[in-house]
Image (cartoon, rainbow, N blue to C red; front, side, top):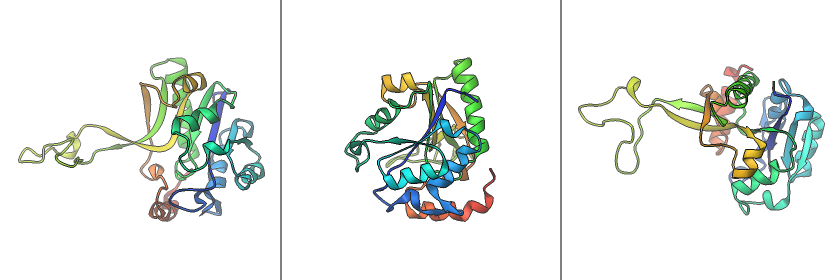
Length: 225
């Protein structure tokens, strides 16, 4: 495991679609505490930062024994700040060479998957430099259309079978990794040549709508850390 890796869990109290989303019940706790517990299984608490503007969420982090990054109000209220401003505004204060941006509302990405992703990042990004960053993904072999036409297959008598569809990767939003210096230079946590770390389908559930939350809870019986 990289010793100079910081895991940042960015959370804010308010959410545009679900009120106090990261405090929703999950398992025997809340979404935020669930995510902190997951990461604590593989990372030292000294390397884990909960970035938030909220004293309520800070209290959850302190209860779990991890570190707190107090986020400026401007970076937490609505969408006043751009996403790039949020990333840079948080990462500039975290003095570690490498950053893992871990999302609390992707609850079913398991500790073993994080651990494997960290190992791959260490090998292929840091040491061998085949890639410049990493993100978690689901590879899709499905049929897609835009508003007018099919995007990845022939929708006619030459219909493409699913096994021959091109590989398309869906960003799950569960994990992003890059070195801190590059993040601050470019204003983003991915470079031009990221490693696509494929995770299970349930690991790709991102709670955006309440329906996503209900699906994640229903699938807890399939979760294996």
